[in-house]
Length: 247
Image: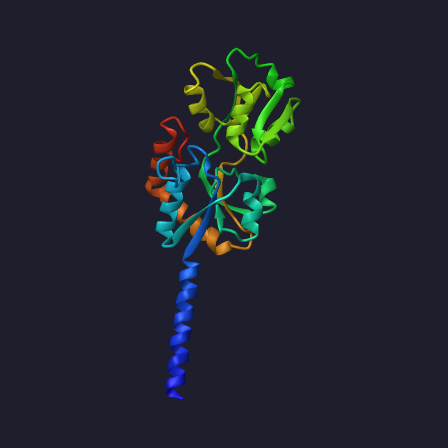
């Protein structure tokens, strides 16, 4: 009987350890196609970018292991809800519409301007009555849809740029930080037009609505990084000195 009890106890301990290990691994979903927020490094084939560095730092502070999962943008929320990963870090703005389906941590990036780009010499009037491209299911797509211009959506951000260069659309609306390298590297082919627009409440981690403890854990880690300045350091490293940081 004693041996049976010892065996049962050992089994319970082993099972408990396995459960603890499982709970100590957090799967983070990202798109890997939106530099400098997140992208696949051509040299390593691994996820890279601001959110990779931030996510790893947050997991280290929370004393959990991170596993990164790459997922297409169009299904990134449904696959969070269905359990394919535990949180989203993919340049996702906090909006009321999304909060009807998932919850968010506090923001780890302040609201940043979205901007329009077009072929050089394009008249800004196209922003009122032309065809504007945006990545599907983004705050930018929603903003265009509320105006008078025609919206043309694409699954990936790179496809919006290709459509502009091919003459399929008159302009592209996206996060300004994403667009700056395209304009800078275009040899004058592309330029910013019109006024920047502020949309959304900043960028945060998407969490299932039932995962209160996970959200609180990451909120605490984000608080720590805001308090000690390390979050601002990462923001400046990836986005430059002009990007807004936390006071």
